[in-house]
Image (cartoon, rainbow, N blue to C red; front, side, top):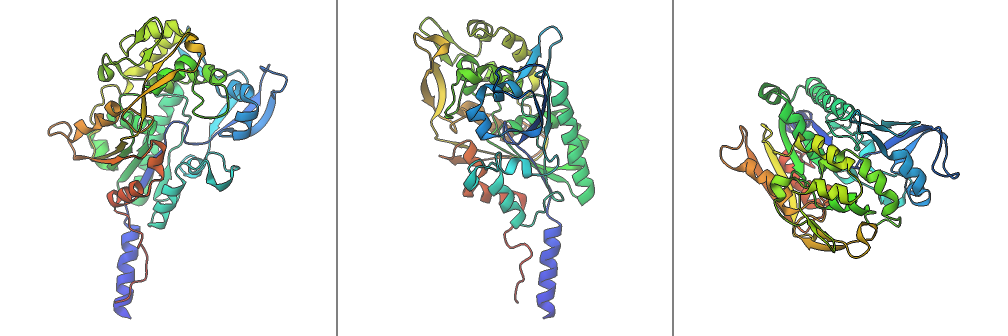
Length: 404
């Protein structure tokens, strides 16, 4: 009996000694709430006033009142002051800062967890010994803003504070797990900190499906809108999608995409070297200025200076070029596919490989590559979660009463 108790106590001590984890979600992977007191609306069907409600994601509002939803969530760019803000009369807030509930499911009203994001991962982590809001923390954010704006810059500071707070409260360094654009947020944060800070507070970083060099899919979004398979007109949400600062952060980076043709029309081709012409020709010249303020944030893909385990998947058909016909940018393009994870192109995903090369960074780095798992599938695939659990030192047997 004494031996049984000692094994149980040691197991429990191991559970308590688990490295705490902070999750940084990707673009659109956490809920966003809004409150309305608008001077006017785009339609009589839209509300001028409304108390706090879920703006992202409210599936019924998005599908049934698309113009109202798009007008509420879009940003307004003031070229004169080079600033972005909510539309007039719209106030927004992020849900459950420090927790995970806002990115476990995006629209809890949809049955069968159809809008689940990190739900499976979080459930696995908690069953493996981590505790919500103690050793498992979340860093949701307003995914429309990049760190080049005041809102985005505040998020980076808040994320730094959350890491320090979690480390100080648990007495351990923190492991960071990020997905998609959350990888850019995390890379930017780490590149801004001293090596001493990283050594003190960060155990390791595990980025999933990081779009380090951008994604060709952003070209379609800016040119003609992208409904991503939803039953709404792509053109009806094009203005809203163009307004997000982060949709410029995710654009293909010229130095990595080179002279690869990304968009074709009946009269010319566009590469990442020809953004000025591209934004002029799609009728959004303000895009030139927005791109230039955001592009330098992480475009160099500078090594993070912490132990890193880069995870991504290949062998999924991924848009590599969009071909527009006679209807120009007002019509749906034909898609030419290449390699990637269905959303991010291979050339972009593989950029973290360079960190594993000798002399590229001050800490250890390795790559864990998967096949045939989609960009969003990286959040729920069992083999990915198993690999995460191993890298984080988690075990499904934490706290189990072992007989000896």
